[in-house]
Image 1 (cartoon, one colour):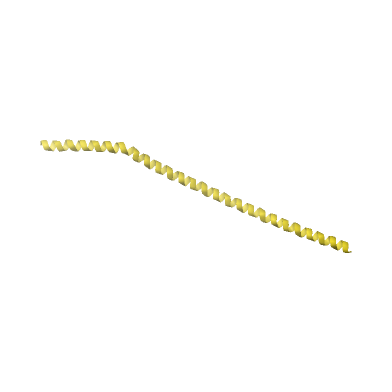
Image 2 (cartoon, helix red, strand yellow):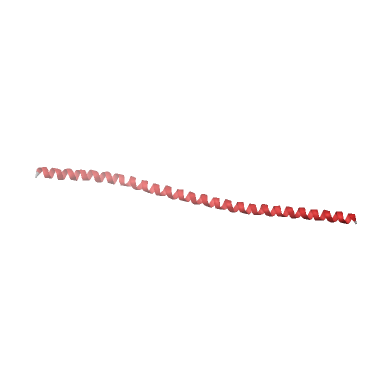
Length: 95
């Protein structure tokens, strides 16, 4: 009977120390999980920002390309009109 009480007391003390260890480290474990979630969320947010910047850059490039193309068309038209004007001037002088 004495030996049985000794094992019970030893088990209770071991359970007490085990529970103190778990209680002390559970907060550290939970904090690590929170930190991982926070880092993952921040990385996702940064990725979304980078994608949005890339999308805006592409839109901007498309607009600039359209403007350059239109500018080139206008220059070509002005050259054509200038050539037409010079041809008329030559034709008028010839008459």
